[in-house]
Image 1 (cartoon, rainbow, N blue to C red):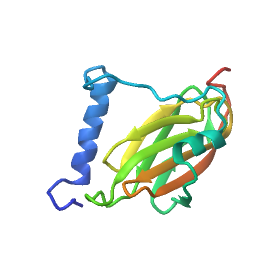
Image 2: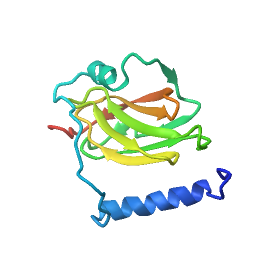
Image 3: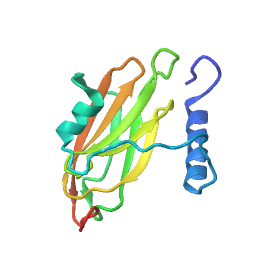
Image 4: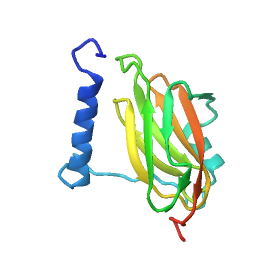
Length: 159
């Protein structure tokens, strides 16, 4: 599958994997100064969603988003999360951001990834059992979400 300019999904995923390995190894340096986003320590998931998305309606994303996360996390400190989004990745329709939100964490917005490819991967911390959401923001502003309940058997964020 190509985007009409000869770039395949496989090429994009390989490039992202290489970039991820370089970044994890400290080899990639981003230009400019990095600025962290403010996520209140005791922000509820409702407050976080309102702050990030305002009053925008979220559509069911189960047809386009695959959230792969274990149903039971043996250690809440390291919970593998894989997010895959089926997207045409054209100049007029692409994945702008992928958010991972853990409803019961003190800081519910676990990560926001800004990208152009159609997959995301991360390890997250979960303080306790609860829903984990993958929210995708398309280039046209459309929001899609899926959520899955994860049971944590060993605390990660404080236990």
